[in-house]
Length: 99
Image (cartoon, rainbow, N blue to C red; front, side, top):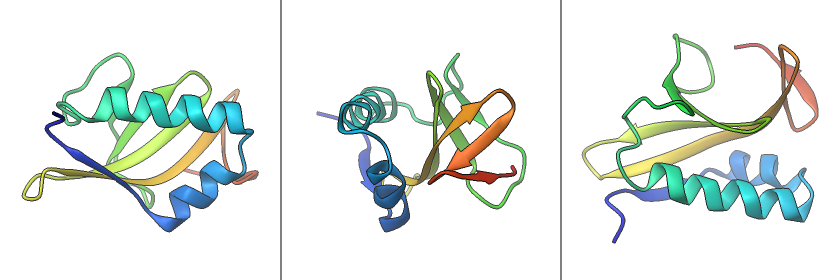
């Protein structure tokens, strides 16, 4: 049984919808694997971000980036955005974003 419940915001759902179905499934599977237990522990693929307008945490899944917040009181992880990186540029729903 997972320690943390994973929730996706409507915006994160929309971000995923832009991706091909195979990539959507892969990203969702990795989110479940990586964030169900100890989402606040930094690893090779998870890190706390500097202050920014998107989120506090980032999960790296290949070229994809999942941005999330941790709600310790309710033991929930809220995925707020999903994008991808091309070189040093971040794209969310096909539009370049700055962190």
